[in-house]
Amino acid sequence: MSGSLIIAVVAAAVISWIAYILSSLIKREENPDPGPNRREPLSDEVLETKRLDRWLAAAVVFSGFLAISLPLYFLTEQNRQESFVHAFEEEAVERGHHLITEFACESCHGPGFVGGAASYVEKRSDISVTWAAPALDDIFYRYETDEVRFWLVYGRANSPMPPWGLAGNGPMNDQQIDDIIAYLASIQISQDEALAKADTGVTVSLNRRANASASVEQSVAAQELLIGEIESAPSLLSIVESYLDRARSALDGAAEGRDTDADGISDAAETAIAAATLEAAEAGLAFGGSAISPVLLDPGNPESSFGVTDRQAARTAVSSLNSLATNIRTTAENQDQLLVRAQAGLDFLLDAQAMELWMVDEESLAAATFDGSIEDAERAVGLFDAYCARCHTAGYSAGVAYTKEPGSGSLGPALWNGRAGVQFLSADDMVDFIANGSELGKPYGINGQGRGYMPGFGQVLTQKDLELIVDYLRGETLRGF
Image 1 (cartoon, rainbow, N blue to C red):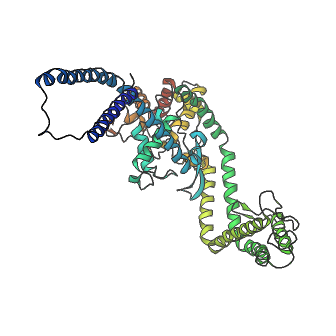
Image 2 (cartoon, rainbow, N blue to C red):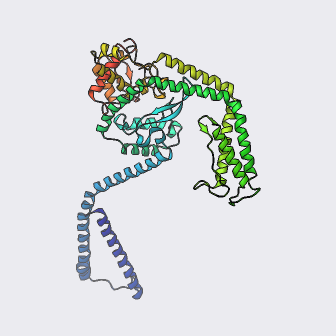
Image 3 (cartoon, rainbow, N blue to C red):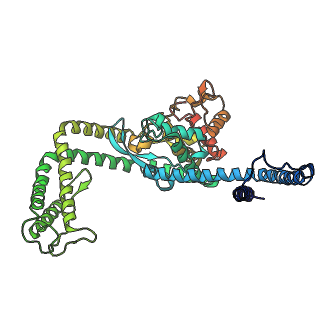
């Protein structure tokens, strides 16, 4: 018997009892009771036989009902409570998905949380970069739930990841953080898929280094272009302002003159604004990644572009010219300061280009650490870059041009100068640590104190891959150990 059926039976009994009481009251009104003191007393035969028997029989029936229904009810209670838990989880996932959408988390971590990028100003160079944001669709294979909650609440300092929890001065309360965790848990890929990511990660990392020189050249070229824009801002401003004045003057007088299509903007104004934007576009006016596009305005058609009225298109065109002029004017007014910063950034990139700190001598590494196996050496370096460099190599997430020597340290400690061999007496101990990660307050290795920052990679990397990473870190080529 299900819980709902038992509730229905009890409800029917209650309704019947209420009906009995009401009917008794109605009968009492029809046959007024003279009162207990004037009523004929019931005889012993009635009290001790028929009346008593009826009440005893009713009590037995009701006791039997309770004896049967209560055990049946509690037999179904566990399933009912489990269904509540499942319903609560589904609701939490739904709320978490709403929060993820509202706060645009996928804009950084990529659609489906497979990994993405975010804008950030790199601290050493003061250059705006595209910062690599990690995938979150396998995060629970690497972190415990409490550790994920920590990153969500407090963010990650010196990265684009902001704090989201109230305790970290973010906008979300504990319930909302839990809802996001529930959503992330619901989108986790299978462990086989997580393990398969290793090959892709190695390939991407090796390609990154193979194309490093071209990547840095692009960064240098972009910085040189920025310096050129800053230097040209004063002269460019007068040109842009001339087009802006023409378009704005035409829009201000749009109510005057002939208006063939009766769209609220005169034929002359439409022609003047279209001409100004066309000339600006043909002149190649652009600044800071923004450029002017010609706007189509037909005096004989109130909607020259489908879905946009000419009046709105004209206003948008003037607004675009004004935004471009404002950006150039701000740059021109602060030209000296901006040039100093931009030149320092260019010097940083040129130094990086000359030093090539991201490079690894794979032949020497193979000979010194992997018995001459270039394949093992390449895979070890690729694995370290894909899974470790984010925290243990300075500048890695900012891009090739900002990447320092492998193992130079960032959020995690530096790993060069023999640290791996000092911290862990044996390779096996180090493999176990990388597989399981650190726990807050729990010691590891020699004098190590866990903070919970170090994830465990035992569920996303094979034993062989873990050993390759450890051999690389304990080898002689990583800064002289």
